[in-house]
Image (cartoon, rainbow, N blue to C red; front, side):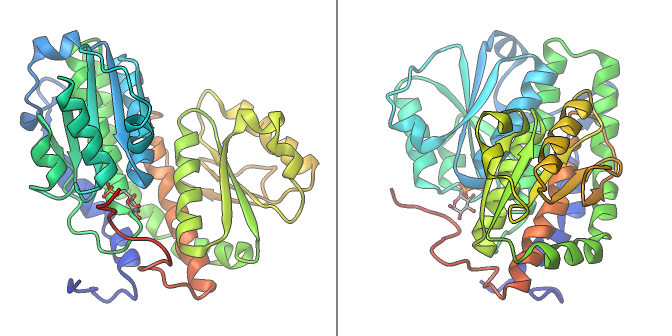
Length: 364
Ligand code: G6P
């Protein structure tokens, strides 16, 4: 790849830094202030059709699957349509029930991932309507889908996805707002989300400015053999993605659990040698999350919290700016990209080309 690194040592660092501009691009020209909604011409889905959707199923692989999980949450909370996400290859091989009232959405940075493409083709063969949420314009999945939206993250070279993940989640917020305003969402909620979306680039910039602090934390945690990531509801896919990022580039074993599931098993693992990264937004689940931190502390586990305010039980807290609760997962993921990055850097890993991985897996 011959894109200019623009003064960065790695593409990953460049791509993390580009996020404020990338988010600006995915928003540009789409917001309709007057009707507190979003215009998405490429969806090929009129208002009448949008009202008949009973369910939304999102399919993707790797980081795109995680973006889809956050997307499903956004769709459920803003559009009140039952939605979930599933790895595309799992879906393909379980002879899924293809339902005419379900809208299927395929998510892919490259638009070429074979498992996703094959799922789209299978769905189309069975008469389903499939939209694409894709970065690469004119890619196979974009061409195969009945419509969709481009996420406009720009070229992503590092094997692991950062800016495209963030932009994909923002694209889902736009889609959720669009569907919400056709269905149930009030004008005031529409405006609230639009204002939140507009604040994102600056808030991401603010988080990026804390890089030196996050680097120090990464140096402290880089000796871990394994790390636990926890979050609840909206925070859980953030934990999943952060743990994947750490695994991919640092080769440190990591796993993500819903905080509520700790007591049903993984609590047995907690000891000083297994640090936990906890996603702790200031929302209606704050007290529940704090209780989980207490459980971990009682077993002498080290805790790094990503939160809207200092967490007393945590050994370290990375404080991120607050947005609207629905959009907070977008911001909470950013410091954890930097955590994975600096952990991998301090371990001397080949960050842009991690072992055994390819940017896009175009074979089965
Ligand atoms: C590969 C990459 C992952 C990526 C996944 C899906 O496995 O290593 O980083 O998330 O493919 O790629 P896509 O282009 O479909 O988003």
